Image 1 (cartoon, rainbow, N blue to C red):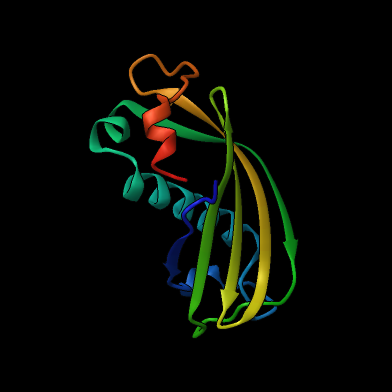
Image 2: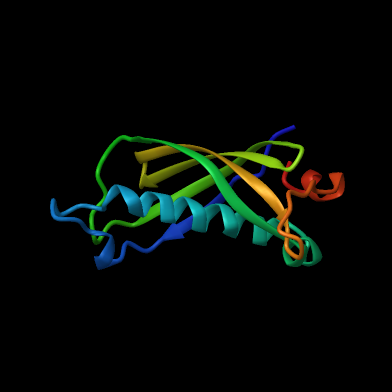
Length: 129
């Protein structure tokens, strides 16, 4: 089974730029969160989106090249697997063909009402592959 990749366009904001004139490392975390949530909202059915929330458990970022204010940046998100209430993602952030960062992350699905970990129905998971 192959996952459906999700491309998420990133707007580099002046607030993302640090004292060295390029995007601050912390902005990449914000971008990954936005891209993963966008992926979920685009592919999951509306009722699943309303009933579930996602919280990040771990991010492992490998920075390759700096990003700058006027760059056109795209994050490509791929869901690698779902295990129980956990989802494992790979996100590659690029400027054109140039890889700026690679991110491995794990997330926990929560029931929106109880805020307790929740497993997704197989029919929801299957939509991502």
